[in-house]
Amino acid sequence: MNMLLDEVKQSDSIYMPIPARITAVTTLTAQEKLFTIELPHELCLNHEPGQFVQVSVFGVGEAPISITSSPSRSNGTFELCIRKVGDLTNVIHRMERGALLGIRGPFGRGFPIERFRGKDLLFVCGGLGMAPLRSLVNEVLDDRGNYGRVILLYGARQPADLLFQDELAQWQARDDVEVHLTVDCPDEGWNRCVGVITRLFPEVEVDARNTVAVVVGPPVMYRFVLKELKKLRIPKGNIWFSFERRMKCGVGKCGHCQLNHVYTCQSGPSFNFAELEFLEEAFS
Image (cartoon, rainbow, N blue to C red; front, side):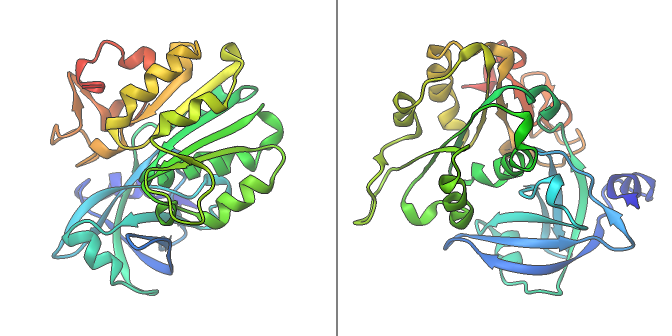
């Protein structure tokens, strides 16, 4: 089976997408849908958790989208959770099973999951950050015996905005996954934490020397979460952030993703804090 990225590199232009077919569409929330994508000609994506693909519609445009399915559950397809926020994503949201999308990638450096084995994992996630984080969470759960504690802190604006609610319920029902949820605007049925994601930190205790933290969400939350992780004394090299929301061209040409002198689409989007602490733009 050939890799999609090799196929893209061998084409006349690295910007040339491969047509891929939508095989399923699932509505997750009022703003997000889950698209299952199948590549042609026995191509496989061969991605890592934390990577992204460039998604295009001919005549409309192209955008980077994080891969939300785990490599362990590929089965010849992959999944993208897409929020309806602009012209391109509005068009994609109107697409149905059988429609074609252009795909390039996967791009970027994913999370180094081999370095996480044997560690306790603290996942900190805000809003749409669950889309890329789900890939890593399910990869870990499918190899559960090789990791210590799995703790998830997840915040959203309101209960209806929580993504993958069926899977969240499954994770909460397990005795080897600790799930802590918070929302800014609760409804009548909400009986859990209310407030921003940092409100959840007093609920957890960790073995700092044996814990890896992975943070994915809106950049505005990163410096506040970092303060909490420093209080827990988790080593710099074990605190990982994703800068997937800065992606643009995916191949280091446009400069949109730059943090100081670093092209995050080439060196990231996954970075540990030891790599970021001297990049002023990372937490500004």
